[in-house]
Amino acid sequence: MQNETEVEISRWAGAMGLDVVVLKILKPRFTNQERTPSTDEVVDYLRKLSHEEQANAAEYIRKAPRQIDTDYRRRIEQEFGWSPVSVI
Image (cartoon, rainbow, N blue to C red; front, side, top):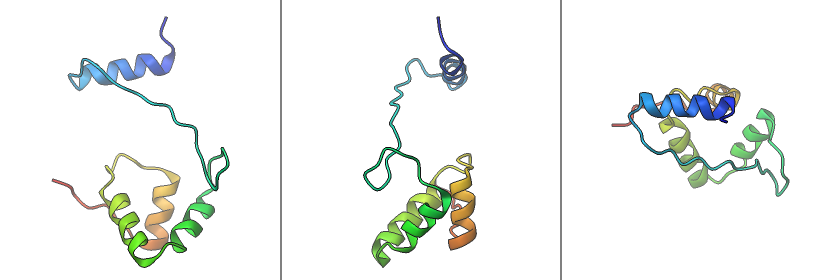
């Protein structure tokens, strides 16, 4: 018997023409603790990165699919102006 999440993933995979989906459930980690950071903590973390690390983070975040529409992303866009870019 499949749970609700498994059914949804199965429907999505079928719609995408996929025969197999590998899903790895990772627990959140922040500052060596098993917890999800707040949006304030994420913004603070990004602000403290070196110039090079911040440039890498900006590229990663800006190239993430637009469908990744989270509180984190909206706040990062607002704080840093890292709007999405098209990836071909």
